Image 1 (cartoon, rainbow, N blue to C red):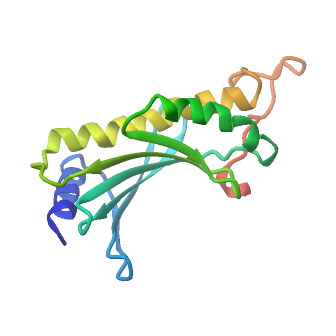
Image 2: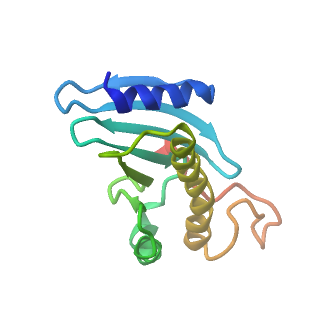
Length: 165
């Protein structure tokens, strides 16, 4: 394991995050995977380390998928978010509707710092948690997905869980 991967492992252990490690021998990438529960959604987090290019990515995947008939509709919203960002981005997979929130960190010439890495990690998780709610509101016409249906008074949540895709 290289310098960046050792650093990421140390940060995850310090924060008592229970993770799995996968080393792709073909690409040389090392991925640390774990799950967290945000205030709004559950999130799968992958920290992907590329020692050769001296970088890592924090990739967060909320446990909510954009319904097929709404995927094109939210692209302008995601584009607007990405235009204003410098270091992070959000995208949607057109095939299955999976959202991905990503922060790429270039490490070349930098001294790795635990506090800064924690900032990257937790900021990306927070972004995924908060902005998934924004996307849900856009998909469902501004109504919070957890709010009761107006006509029925109460009803099921209008989202598509990951297991249904």
